[in-house]
Length: 512
Ligand code: GLU
Image (cartoon, rainbow, N blue to C red):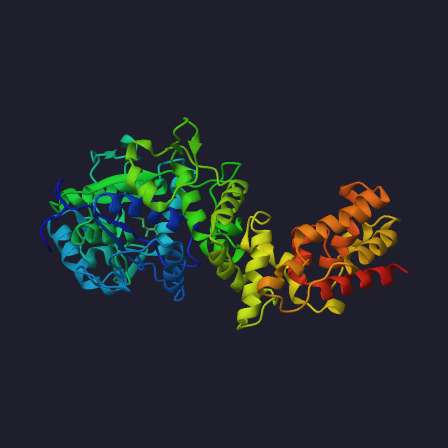
């Protein structure tokens, strides 16, 4: 056992302590963000501790996924199972020896006792208490008995657990950095060491937060009811407790808790798969429990970087009301981030999505990437998610005779579509883009969006008297196969003249 290291003036040390029980939860990133923001602001340390003492729910792939998803968000830890650190090991299953002396001391001091009750007996006891509308909790049958004495009685199980002996007058209030004085129900005789020799969360969290010098325990409000147990353990062990801060739980619009069973977005990996940008997700998670900053004109500034968030962070501003997880807001915010990306950056972020959708091959050529950059420029204001780009980009990478025309685009064509196509073909035929024009010949290159637009407007809007809103629908369908596409004239420019003409002619022939 080490001496308390959580003196008030100690360098702040914060941690996130997820349990590897499945796909990482978005709540873990939300907690990591607030812990990390404060740690960075204070020049402190941020620790990742893996709380894997629940062996029944342990999932062996979960820890790697945790590294991937938190790493993707850029929420980096200074110490953890993968990077090590002065308080290693950071996986609780590797720290069983650390917990043992603490348990022995609690038993020796009369604060904890062995309990041999079988799970059947405990279940029957709970049923009885519920039927009689009594408070549920352990009835202390084993307390004060030796193994032999207890073995004489019903519901005996060979391997004991260890329970806390919680006095009637145990303190039930504690100070919370966000909430002030908080009261919680009186704990019952909580198990601290399980029959399999593993500590429960309650003991392990106290021992590790102490041993690892954690100064601030920032976690979800679902742990408020556990905190009095932890405070008691600190007291019994003569340790200085850390400061506690309980963050509001993330909720659905109907106020229910978000869960991986009901909400796909509760899985952190979902955001990456959907094409959200990590910086937008981090920003969004911050906004969930933190007010937007004020701009110079007093308006809300909702877009902020992690560095800005961390610099201005104050516990007093954290909301205590359960934030609603508003995906529409996230989509909007993500769109803002996409608009602000440098074009090369947007292009490289699009590549994996286009590869996943089969638009690009495994190793795109320089030419394909250069073309993608021009396309990215055209769609930058039109997508909110990276995954929305594939249908807009695909037409640029398929052979002209393999372009699929979407049914809704075909259905939207009016009777004048053949005439519009004829006029467009004639007008564009007059425009010329010699291959490989460079230098002084550039003026001869008329296959540019402004010239294309001018020629088509003259032929269709002015020549045929069709309103621009309707004039270009058939051309869009012919060129992109979609009703909604990147800007038409720019698309034609990127596609080049031969492809554009082939596609216009293709649709014209199809319409008969
Ligand atoms: N292992 C707990 C969890 O999965 C950690 C709670 C805490 O931060 O104390 O959320």
